[in-house]
Length: 259
Image (cartoon, rainbow, N blue to C red; front, top):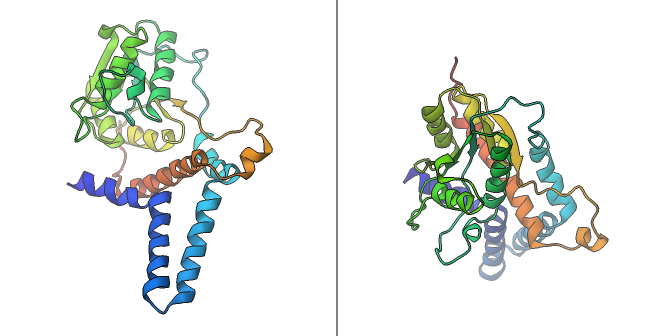
């Protein structure tokens, strides 16, 4: 129940629901009360917020600091590892679809980056994490494992941790499985700073491997920067989500485990 409340309340604080709530308040004030000026202010602020968060320069400016802390994993200069841990993300499951189509948004880039690193470390194992969604018969870890198999990873090299429901539980389960052995941790670039805190809190020393970078640094056409787009609103959402997550983490995380 606490997990459901956390996800529901957190979801309402994301940009689009939050802005729609502001707009709803504005409409109530405009149509059902005498507080016309207040209603106009609420509506104007919500419209402006939606516009700004949908623009590439604003959205990627918010997201870039989260994604720039760690560089793409390169096998050169790193000690070979026995485990590549890929954190779970969005997914669904339809057995009639191509396997990779069941990984939504951030999940497929995590898996493909994990496979690249796995192939750079001969003899290693891939660990996929992620519990079963409430209405889904298959876990996030299992779906990711099926995709990895479809891309040539032997089933014998795949380990599924299908109980964790969030990053903190993923860190705990990884520690139970492999102890303090070094491993590569693969997750979305914007999620990696927060994820590493959970793993360090368990006394582990993961090697960071960012995937699914979103903030665009390469040249864009002028109209792509000037016109609001749903794509860039999603970039703002990721920055907003991770910022809320860091605040909650700071408020609730216990002291790190000492070795």
